[in-house]
Length: 422
Image (tube, helix red, strand yellow):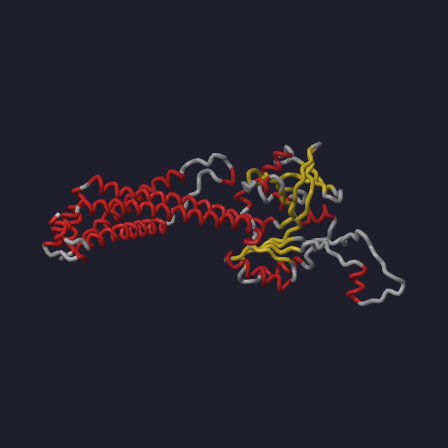
């Protein structure tokens, strides 16, 4: 039997029961459209959060953590095996040494790292906790002394400025750029002067030359930027005092390997962006798994619906099948006929499904985000990756193929004599 004849019979069967055929097609359509809406929205959210994490944090951070552990006199004696002739000395509640988080020869390290071919940019920083004072108002936070040009190259600070500009730090040695949330807390605006107090009691009066907004409350409510010299001045440290080195790579996926290499080379603590955002990425993986489970479930449920419809369709066509076999149709011809019905349903349902899926995904992408300004997002993020649409049609096609194969296989084994006899 030719494929054309099988196709003609398949179309005839589908048109003979239009409602049943439409219901089967809509099962595919619903499964694929919901699959596309779900995976486009969830991956869009994940991509947005990944980009946010990459944009606002260094790929590698080098710092010198303060060590609180300290050997007691007894431990030191045991380590050096020094005899104690006069007896045993015991020291209670021994305090840790006064160590500083300074990176020794930090600027030299910056110049070395900048020459590495894998590195896109490096920003040295001096960070410390401070209190922001504006009259009677006092708010705790952090200040980062940085080379604002290099910092802008890493984090594109210019795009995050709500008022003023980053160049104000270049021309004003006593300037400061503060977060939008912090500005509201201390009731400060560009041009105002605020005093900064360190935990050691050092105070410095600075002029607000700009206000930035990362869209992240934990940053905007507490952080500020000043020049390296300004922060070194308020801490009363020399010009070589550096506490952090932020690094961005050309390929962020190499951050873990590169961090280990820098730790081996320089001996300072290194932290890659995956480690720094471990909790975030755990949630990211959970969302991906949930998306995959729900999406596959939708397609499987649609497949079972098609299977039931095809099964009932074959039962209704049992006499037609018996006549076809009596006329010389073989089992493989019967299978081909009903598989073609499944393929037609799968293709039509798939095309309609991707159209409806794209339509609803587009509506979501145009829906205003309920919290205006939150995370610098105005509408819901949606990922219109063409691979999702190809995958949706493919899975829909495969699902309908299998859903039609098993009833067709059952139909191919029908004994036409028994059916005709009744």
